[in-house]
Amino acid sequence: MKRSHVLFDIAVLAAYLLAANPALTGIPLHEFAGLGAFVMVAAHVVASGEGLGSRRRAGQLLLNAVLLLALAVCVVSGVMVSGTVLPSLGLYASGYHFWDPLHAVAAKVLLAALLVHLVVRAPAALAVLWQRRGLRAAESDCLMGR
Image (cartoon, rainbow, N blue to C red; front, top):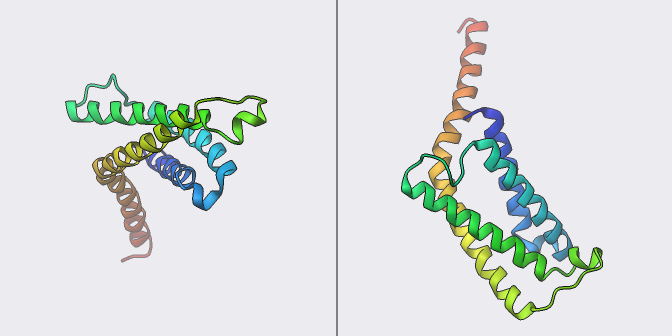
C-alpha cells in the first residue's frame, strides 16, 4: 500500500461522509456528491487492486460483495428517487414508495459494511502513514545531528 493510495482513500472517505449526510448538505448537493462519491469508490476499487475476484479470505470476499451490492443498490435507488439529478436531465422515475425505503436500507447497510471495512483496513493504512512520517522524522533528526 502506497502513501498516495492511503491519501486518496481518505479523500474517498471524506466524499462519502459528505454524500451520506443530506441533512448537512441539502438534497441537491447530496445527490451530486453521491454520484461523485460513487465514481471515487470505483476508482478506489481499481487502484487498490482488490475486488470480488481477489484471492483473499472468504470474509474479505463476503465484505467486498456486501459493499458492492449495497453501493449499487444505494446509487440506483438514489437516482430513482432523485429530486435534482433526474429532473436536471429532464427525466422522472415513478415508484418513489418502493425506491425511497430501499435507498434508506441500502444506505444503512453500506454504512455498516463501510465501518467494518475501515476497522479491517485502518491498521495497514495507519502503518503506511506512520512509517513515512517516522522515516522523515528520523531523517531530519540525522540532519540536525540528534
